[in-house]
Image (cartoon, rainbow, N blue to C red; front, side, top):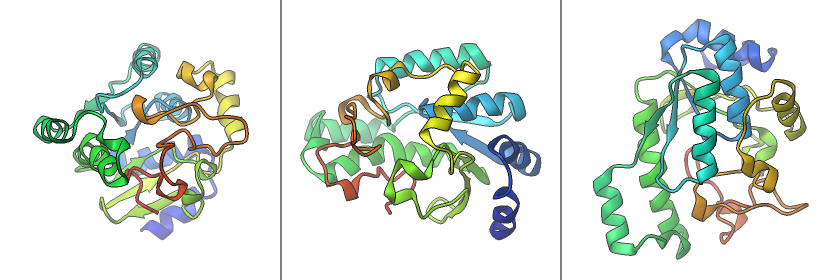
Length: 231
């Protein structure tokens, strides 16, 4: 099934990928948004091609004010409900009570614990019961992602992942935003290429890696939170 889906989708444009997946899988498709530029492009496409698709976001409790701003703008523009998944209160309270509010700076282990509680566990609840998960992953975002493709099987979550923008460049993403006047996070204009939780994200300087602003105090090879696998 995966091989056949790869064969079909590899020859399609992003909008066609979305339309095909929606037609084939219907209400078994879910899209995750963190309101980054790629996700805004996909939201625009979904609103046009498959607006009944389930959409969710992970509300970690540590997002930028600008992220909440674009969340509201997106709801106003497209009128598609976006379900928010929060961390389990007991686990979050225990971690913060035991280690403090910024334990993620102290070690990779602590940071991954925080990511698990705030993002990974809620993600598992968000995608449970779905067969296909649409994401905004692009190949050039990270060297850890270059060996992926438009379609992959996520063994850990037992779900098909589809990345319609996988081969898009940053310039193509920005061009689409301008061409269709798609709302986007104003932090992108301030050098924030990859935006996550506020304490763990900084702007990126000229010549720096796309994800250099995420968990900048860690070794480059460890810069994945686990949402898309530790590669």
